[in-house]
Image (spheres, one colour):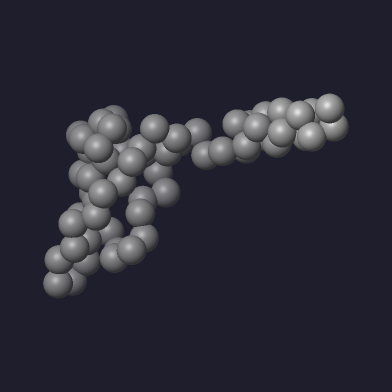
Length: 63
């Protein structure tokens, strides 16, 4: 019983403290020589950035 309560509490904490700005974003990287272009497969937003570092914010409204 204690394990089940612990799992429920852990799930609630993850849901509360997860980053809501990028919760739906799924970034895919297309690398270039000088940097990368990132595309969100959920909303289609595209942004230039550094290699191997996905954006921290959602750019859904700036398409």
